[in-house]
Image (cartoon, rainbow, N blue to C red):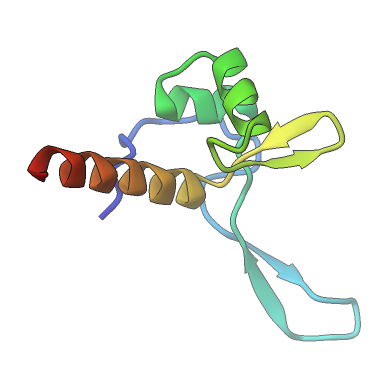
Length: 94
């Protein structure tokens, strides 16, 4: 069950998975989840983009750095949030 809020994003990559051919001679396609930029990912998490960059750089929030640019998968952010809420529940029950 996703815990990220359902909000419209101006994601240039689109919101649905993109089918990408493996090569020009193959009919096999793979599903590619569009990547969010720092602005869109920060909006989802409701934090400042600089905070997101810093936490991703320290490995606290999962992200992919391509050169100097950070990209994020919504599914990875959702899993990270679920892990954070699970840890909070366990600490409160102890």
